[in-house]
Image 1: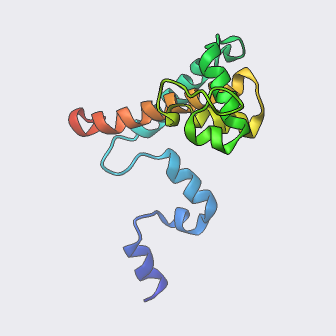
Image 2: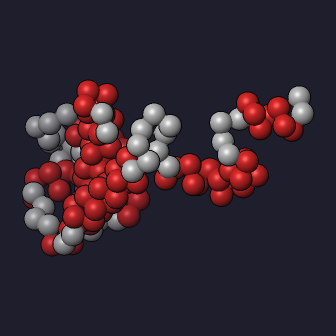
Image 3: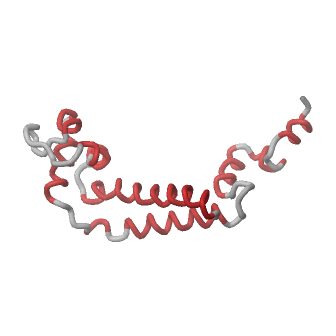
Length: 143
């Protein structure tokens, strides 16, 4: 196969195929061929704006004392993490499934106990929910 044949079979433009990593970064921002050109940049702008609004003043967010303490306890011990223990001894569990607090506990384990470390997983989950909602509704209503 010659270089011309590979360019003909490749769906990228010649400048993208020569660009390497730079071209792959540009493809993230461009809409797929079956969508209008404005669809993906608008979606990414909406997701970024939503992430900014979710994170706005997250440092002063009210923390529910029971679940905040449970997430903190779960971040200190793997036993407490898997059983959803509220106290450090692992004898009292929360009234939810332990998986409901796993992301917060992992965030606390990585970043330490701070209010933004508890709120960060919820910000990420909110942005992911917007992206998933767009993907589902695009199939029904289009871009």
